Amino acid sequence: MQNADIPISCQTVTVRSASALAPNGLRRMYQLQGHWEKQGMAATLRKIGAWLLRACSPPAAAEATPTPRREDEVLHLRPGEWVETKSYDEIRQTLDSNGRHRGLLFMPDMAEYCGRRFRVFKPIERLLMEDTGELRRMRNTVLLEGVMCQGLNVGCDRSCFHFWREVWLRRVNGAVVQVDREYAAMAR
Image 1 (tube, helix red, strand yellow):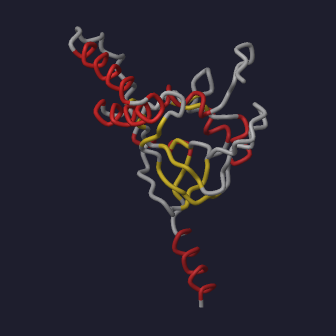
Image 2 (cartoon, rainbow, N blue to C red; image 1 turned 90 degrees about the vertical axis):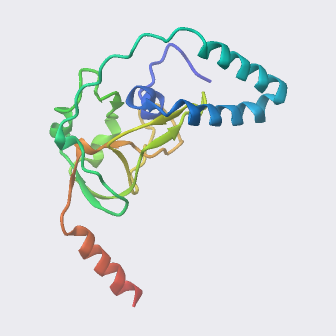
């Protein structure tokens, strides 16, 4: 049950402001699939009709121009690469007054992972909003192996991955080769 009086600070709640909508065709396909499964054919056909009517209406005003990206924000990290999270002070310099970087909240319990080395689990390029079925795009954001939300600030037991902006990380050179040799030695 959601309580409107208690402000929730969680990345999954605020991910809408840290991502962009996926192309309309792909989004609509996923939305229709979920709507069909929940509501049936007749309701889905009515929804398609409503979308077509809206498509014929005049276009909405253009969105604000996004802030240009700095080169140090883009590392193009791949799964298996090793990174070191920057210190809390370095990360804090990238945040706005609301504790966000380009809309993505840096949660207080992420501070315990600052200054440590982790392996990249995978980059985040697309995610599906569970509440609306929207498909959203994210850039320069990764998941790190074993770095999960403990839910301490909000009383949540879900154990979601924390989203990490690449600007909060630095690549560790040589660590991948050394660890891969260790794995090869253990496999013998």
